[in-house]
Length: 266
Image (cartoon, rainbow, N blue to C red; front, side, top):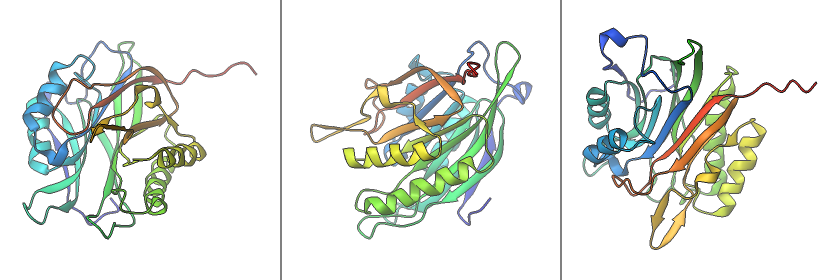
């Protein structure tokens, strides 16, 4: 894995389910959630188990997590996981990074250190990805390259954050996966930055699947579109932001996808 940062891989799935996950849902469900400084693990667990649109996800992409919090969530929910600690809080010593968790096997873990750090309040960032292979009720499998990213805060110029967006997308599409989901907190606090990432990712063949879901954060009475899930090779069967789930300053996003229909018009 192309990083010198601390990477943790773990698996807390029951041994009898070492090669399988939850049955019954045809679509592949991904939940994306920035957990503010990874502090409210209890609330995160409650949201991931108690809300019908978040429960039994095939992939959970978390940001701002420390390794202990990720380990606990994986252990209590019986998940495999991949975590990258990209930096550490100087005051508390807490780790700061991203995770991908799943009830299915994780393969081909990849870490991408992000270029550029904001001079004011910035910190090193990284993205982490893995291939999750779900067995659908029909017996068919769906392998999804799944990524969790947390871009730098807006005190870094948009051009510097665009370089971060580009680094992750370029790495994610390099093996040309049939199905790709790229999720996280992109810190797109302005309409200009949202348009910039939409246009950039369109060049990589990535669509913003969660556009209909709306904003994912309220601060000082304003709503922001910070968190997104982009994808290619998939069709959306459901999408939303759950604003009644309170474990962070961000609200969790989710999307249900299936393999994209083949156009046979030619």
